[in-house]
Image (cartoon, rainbow, N blue to C red; front, side, top):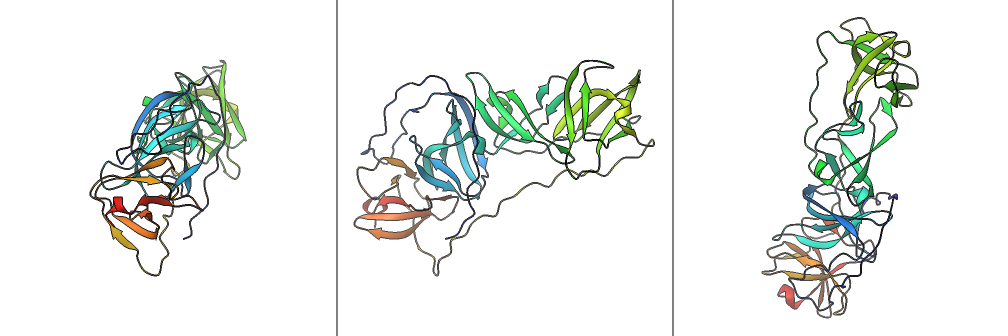
Length: 343
């Protein structure tokens, strides 16, 4: 089998910890995952998620127990931890017809989207609605997120928000049309300082991406050498700037600046000469990372799940979901008892 390499991780903060019980190695098919062993805050997200291929799923202790293949899969997030870097406690799949792994993924690997504009500088700069973001920090009441601006803007923007402002559903960004009397203004310099009013206080800056010819803004109101400008894209801007820093376009003229294309990931395929045998368990079957009784469960195969039988060894079966939404670790396997599968 050949799949693309994993996505990279990067860090943020950490508070106190509480001791918790570990999973019982002899837990049966209806195994419920143990309470989290690292402190965190509740963050309930549920839906269909499309991960970068090979994104790892870890056990409590950090061992890789599985990988996302790049195929859309159902995901339930229950909390985000205060670890450095933060992790998301997740369960994959549905109750029926899927492999349900209980584990953690790096919080920044979650494919999350804003459900509303998230302020960077209140009233003036924001990450737009239905835009992809990464969680880079977790506090008891807020999440730190970041968004890398699409061309022609450059730079990564950060903001603080709550779980309720995020979703696994990408949705559709809202459309925006400039007022009929608005005029186009082009930024052809490297950066533009944004102000809260004419000759006002700075609220931030935007930067032209390397290779971009210009950045288009729309504006109308002017006062004492300053112009009120707006831009409604992945980064929303409503602020004032020095008119001399911008090139005013002839009225009615704009620049062609299309929205960036949506990124997709190629899904893997199982490269075998013949398709393996398929079984459908009639009840939940416990999954383990190794073929031994004392190995703690990592999840279950849901009842009625189409399951590939890869290998059989001394009462154990190496298995894979036929849906191929989840993969075992690079050098590992998913194992279930032969008798539990009815073989």
